[in-house]
Amino acid sequence: MPFAHCRVAQAVRRSPPADLAVYDDLGLYAYLPTESVGERVMAFFHGLAGGRSVWTGPLCTRIASYCANSPYIARVLQSVLALPDPKGPGCVHPDPFGVVHTVRLPVADSDSFRQSPERAELPAVLTQALDGPDVLGHAIQPCKIDFIAVSAILVYLNALAKERGRPGRYRLCIFEDDLSALRRLLRSPELDERGQAARAVLMGELERAGLSLDDLFVGVPWLSQTALFALMKRCGFGLAYNSVPEALGFYVIESVLNGCPIYTNGAGNYRFLLPAGSGIRVSETVDMHFGDIAGYREVARSILDDVESGRGRDACRAGATRLRAEYTSESFSRDLDACLRKVDEPPPDPIDADPLVITLSPVVRAWDGGRRVISDHVSTELPAERAELLRQLLGMRWADARGLARERQEVEDLFCDGLIALAPPAPSP
Image (cartoon, rainbow, N blue to C red):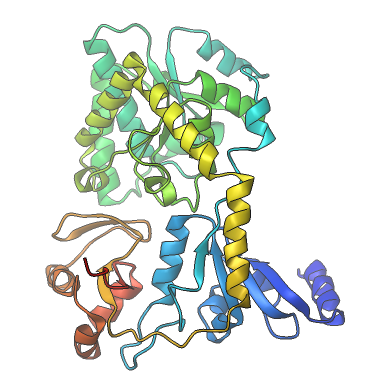
């Protein structure tokens, strides 16, 4: 019940309009950004879950500056605000590319990293596992794990280690609730076709290797921040094969800063966070995503090679140097200042959508050129006719595609399914 909400709304109504009203995306639901709230409005987007009817609707132009917490969220915001109108020359927002800014958060120079202890109080189950002969990894992100992917990686890790005659096992620390969910998943009769095929192969690999889930996973309770950092410092690898795309990726940043490399499918901002060789290795193929778990053997081989050679920790040192240079209080201040300057500028004239070019949407992680698309929105296997339309549209100016969009509803569907987006044309050389 919105009792406290009403009290806040009453307080806002009693107050004179602010010079600048600053919202986050969820706050846009709490009280509409009308002129009675503030002369000017700035909104900060941690993700895209909140206030959608406000920032994509008639009030979107009341927001003078859209601030995103990562380049990924900025790109996705722009792609939504640039959705075209097949019956007219405009987009959802009159200035979809100029109104969005990235604000880097002061993550890497916080006191928690300067003072994080090498050891902290850890649960007995973790202390015993860390002090044994096994190599531990971590994936402590509740309700976000792609269980098929991480299980396959662990099976192949242990098989490859055995082939090389290495002692001990490779195990992964996950939350106790996630381990319970994994057990239920492997018994579930309601898996989709991809899940059923992957489960059959996975269970066969487990049986062939003589392994159980308890051999692969360590279920842990909720950890304090200092305990989590202490665990990361002692882990050989981290997995971020996520079913949920991350807007920024605090967890991955924390792991790299604590010297533990991350291997990921690149969901959300993970594939944009750091360049190659900086502690985050993005490894995903269309075949892997659609159920061919044999592809995860190469991910396992990379982890094993990096752990044995020390390359993973070396890469983290390079990544930590970059993070500490970019995600600081100073960079946050500079980026925020740019957003504030935008607020003071007069609104620009609406852009003409016709010169914009159709590209793959920023939520698309991979496309095989045929029918299969991996997406942070909805991965799909396209009908052959729609796949051909996608190939036809890519690279086309909206001026040339608008007539086709009026004739074929599928063009608008490709935009709304998050498969294509409009972008400014590449600058001339």
